Image 1: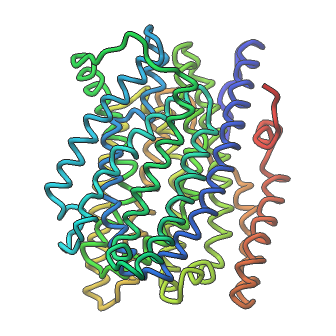
Image 2: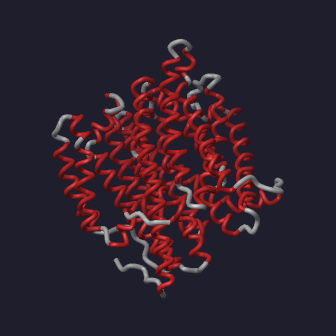
Length: 506
């Protein structure tokens, strides 16, 4: 593959190297945060699977799924659009952030009121407690926390996201879930609603953790007053971005939602655990997104399209390489990984493998979209809309086909995961080609070194599967990662890639 054209002069080259260094630093910090988050999420999944059971976990997954969608919509695309708004505004940054938070608050209240009035949207079975019906109050802290972290990311404060989303949120949820289950021995309603109460507590704690550095960084707005007209214009301007965000988020959740309408709650709970195990590779793209957005907006302002192409390809390869390694490490010993959460969860091994594969094929789409939301919002939106429509049709079709052929819910779940693989693969092809045509450069994450690294890693994984389950997990996963990482480092990473692992002084 021919690389995009090099920078025209040394000054541009130095600026671009500084951008790559910033991307690498932000990516390292956020990646470390997601490793922490995965480690902190394991106790919650263990508690939920072993103590509450797959059926209760499935009901929790369906309810919080709707709440998270509402919170996603309530941000109105400002998780990514706020960077562009801050770059353009002549007013004090604190007032711009205040407008964004107020707009999110208004939409969050409307969404929360709707779900409280129509709880069947969260609980399709109609089975919920009075406490669980109050779950929509979690929309506000979730959405406000996302906007606050986006504002901090604009100033390259990725550490705030790590603290809020990777430390405080998952550990609060795990500790609350365990504590409420124990307290349920004296008062049963706490145990019945324990997972959902733990979720609400985690969202509130994460929001507070985000707001403390936000106030320190931006300060309180001075001489600020709500501007209804400006807020309406901002909402209207962000609608395409909000739609793209909702669709991109929906492609990771639609399978669970549709599965919940066809399969028993226990099957949904098993599939939910498989989804959570894929959290780390799924979130790798957002390791770079908070930094990639400001870098792209600056290069657009300077009309430096070649730099954008190179940065997208660079970050895309980093994400693909990491996702492929993690997919192999978690997928090959999949039975042992799923068995950690209980014997019943081993049935989700096939779904886990497909979900991990989906994250690998999705990488070109997500990095291309990081630039498309600024240069082709509507076209990106239409591709995203087509993707989720295709996924919905495939998911329903494969689930119905599995049912007609007499297969159980486990195979239906695998059908939902396969639909995700196909739809995300097509989206990657279309979005990378669209961005390439706009920038006049070829956009590709692929390097043959990915294949060279995967072959020996698969061999190690197959050998690990011959060992007892606990050895397969405890030794097999690091062995697979070690072999893959060694090959990709020697055969795939050049000097420009190794900056990802090099610390730079500020």
